[in-house]
Image (cartoon, rainbow, N blue to C red; front, side, top):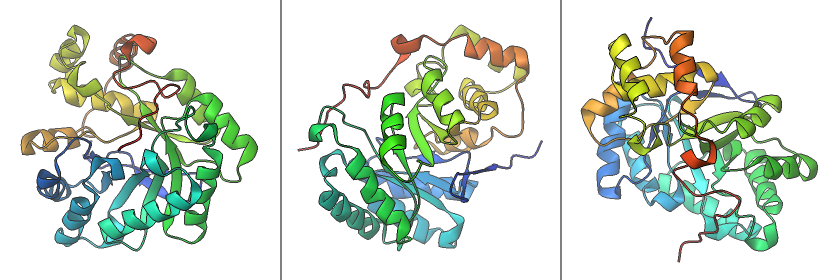
Amino acid sequence: MANTVPDISLNDGNTIPQLGFGVYQIEPRDTAEAVGRALEIGYRHIDTAEMYGNEAEVGEAVRASGLDRGEVFVTSKLNNGFHRPQDARRAFESTLSALKMDYIDLFLIHWPLPTRYDGDFVSTWKALEEFQRDGRARSIGVSNFQVPHLERLAAEADVVPAVNQIEVHPYLTNEQVRAYGAGHNILTEAWSPIAQGRVLDDPTIVDVAAQVGRTPAQVVLRGHVPRGDIVFPKSTTPKRIEENFRIFDFTLDDTAMERISGLDRGEAGRTGPNPDEFDYIPA
């Protein structure tokens, strides 16, 4: 099987590569080099955010790659401090300015923050609808939205999110949110797809990896593929960046997939904050 990254269709007619490169917690000084290496290897999907502080370096790496802008799918996200529509408009302009790009392929509300802004993430979403209408955001979506948040958007907004980027890995399969997305044509993007490395020593993962002759990380990432998840592992180590890219030249049989799915711990497996309670706004 060739190691070709498939493109998945979004509900707005655009497509997104199923595998991307994430830059969460990569220091700005290291970002351009890491993204440049990823693009050399073959990644064509980069996921950043204003709160990561490295949008400018992502843009630098894309320009330095020599690739045409249209060949690289770039995602960024709205800072939690800018949910008011006017603030969101200014923040979006700042994102485009930092990236030095005329448009972004996908722009997300980073967190719903239901206990902030009087619980109003709908007006924030309507600002993103503006960005899509004027062509500066090709696609728009959300991140860390729970089912009630998505149901509220469905009732009060005009555009269905193209994606919902949520925590998904073998210890937290997040089935309820994923099922809602599948039923409403919202793709699931899996952040922390290897649970920040916590699943890599799991005996089941180690055993499956030994059986297929791959690393535990490759097995976990490959396990997301048949489920339709979009994944974007991150690393600054060239060897791991390349290993994480090589997940489409092997398969996992049904037994292996069932064993991996059986590791789900529900909420006990969550490594990040609970979206219903998370209220962080950067100073």
